[in-house]
Length: 468
Image (cartoon, rainbow, N blue to C red; front, top):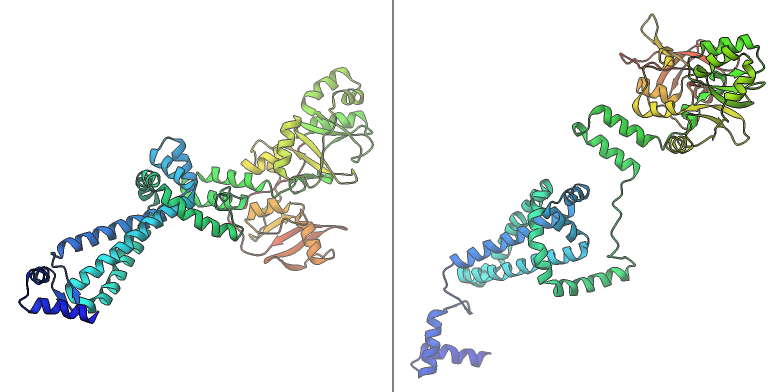
């Protein structure tokens, strides 16, 4: 190197023939600075080119964030509605490995080219010593203007960035497909070595809890009542028929062993359209009949018991533990409106109706006569008196409590489980942070309690009774 360099400098300094004259002309156009040949082209063009490359890098960075973070369900909806940008973006996202490979290929090429250009500018401005300063300055500029700012913008407004970018990436992917394919082949090979399949798209289906969060976060986009109904539908999977059934001791029905006058009086006084028909006790249910349509025929024809046997339908039995959503489908499939809940031994546990399940979704029907039977009412001192036969789910809805619904189904059962004995009247307890006082007990159950905490202004009344 030294002899060659000496010859070069000698040619620049001395009066030599034509070859050296040519070197002197080149030296005048490309002067040396710290041993480097420096181009004297005006700085404006390299700087403009550098700014353009930073803008291109910002486009790659921002569009990558926008495409990867945009709402896939909204994208699918717009694509189905015919939005061309959404269609192109959806097609690109079907193979995210190719899209990422394309974006990173362009972004890295742009950044490396910008770094090279910054080095040339640094040499022209300050020589070799300016290279380090140019590298630090370029890093700061790229970080702010080509990374943080565009990525933040894209995260805040992904659709505004993603849809226009899709128009650019679609033809770009076709043009550079061989290069992208080569890059993906190597990277996907590494993933397969780790037993990962890049072709397998991760599932986008929402779980019940995720869908519940989406409904809640929708806020004003969904009316409050509709939101409550949607949440109630999602909760049907978590509740079973025992949670809302009418317990056997509260079921109204007709026993064929009773006198005919008593049977007719019971049918006349029945508050519900359908009643179960017993023969010798509640454990022997032989059918279900429509009370209101049966009464005129019974009064006209006589032979009450025989006629009730004729018009009653075969009872429809429901196994305990059946989820409410499944039971709703079962009612629809079997064309039934009333089901008798039985345990694994076939013993009658309670009664559930289609109305009970629908009320879990839409709320109480005001035409239901049981709606007027209050299980929660205010005492003279302003406290709440609660009938312990109320179900836990109904109590939670009425007072917005959070008592556990797994386990005992009624407040009485929950208190007995907590106390492990039948408490005496006047006993105070804190049931899952809710202060209660026992007001009335029976031989085998707690009848009434008083809630001594801060009561809501308008508790929603509970209800008892069967819907035959």
